[in-house]
Image: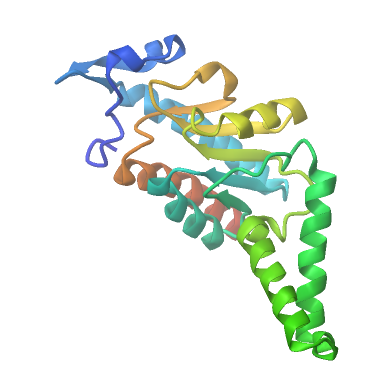
Length: 223
């Protein structure tokens, strides 16, 4: 954890008051997290993630920041969990019925294309439909297999993903989040105090969460 740089926060001037209990000190103008506290909170988050997967429920992985998006997407795909990266789509949780309609449209077009049912259209019409499929995939590709609302969100940077946090709280969806010292820890159910801007730190925490998900799936027969 130390080698991954999880302990590095931002400057004190950016500190949210709720992060103070997790701060060990300051070095070169940057606040340093107490890694014992980080480990404790990480274990709590892992235990909760384990319980969600054991129930057969989904954890929706969320990351908009460029330094986190690819890491999160690849990790979610490895453990067969839904994800939303690049940009949170407003209403994903609070207006899920409408989001589901767009996902259903995507499934329908894919099925029609695989069956050759789109061949009856003109080349121009097929081109328009292909563009629609690509747009739908770009927006909803990570949640096309998600059935209903997820049990929890796993977020990188609760500050950056404030809309996702707001929607989750409105719908009673639990939140696991890697939170730097500028985040409001009070709005997160399972905050993990640590560097949410460094690739190595993000990889470490995402790896810990996905490992416990994978282990749980293996114990339950790989489902």
